[in-house]
Amino acid sequence: MNISFNFKNLDPSPHLKDHIEKRFDKISKFIQDSDESDLQVNLAVEKTRQKADVVLNADNIHISAYEESPDMYATIDSVVDKLESQLRKIREKMKDRRRKAQTRDVRMEYFSLSEAGDAPTITGTDNYEPKPMSVEEAAMQLDSLQFEFLVFRNAETEGVNVIYRRKDGDYGLIDPGN
Image 1 (tube, rainbow, N blue to C red):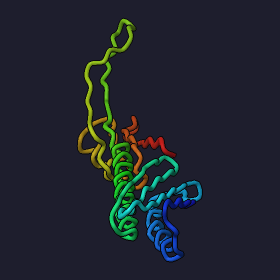
Image 2: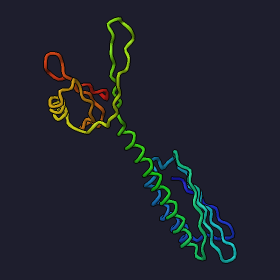
Image 3: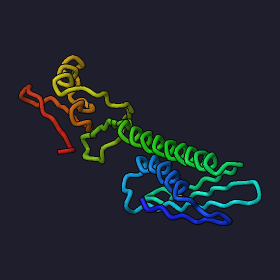
Image 4: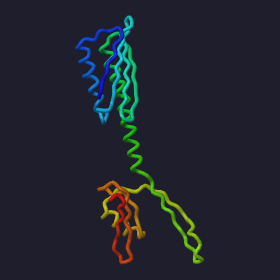
């Protein structure tokens, strides 16, 4: 992560810069590609107020935080905590999106063919969430339900698979992920 400092009405001591770098290193764990991320730290002193304004530009992230207090070290700690809180919230949202993308409902449509050769018509639909199970469990489930096929989430690959009953009595497996 590239960190740049701007100081206004303030002579930075090496101890202050060291404190800032240590505190902002905590943020780098939230950013995946730390080489392409930029962190702009603006510190200012106005009379008795110590101000810190931070802007983070990373891959898909653009956030900022602002804090002011009578003590510069406390201001830096507060602004880092705010930034960390925002990054944690963004990370949780991304995790939730991935989880939702993995647990999509499956829609089944039933078709009816007429003998006149007309186009097939939909006679019904069914939505359900595929349950995670092994291939053996899916075969036992298919056997007990007396269906011709079963859509399930493969517990090993986490992909959606279809197991079906073949005309010779054996089972077939469709795994579109491989």
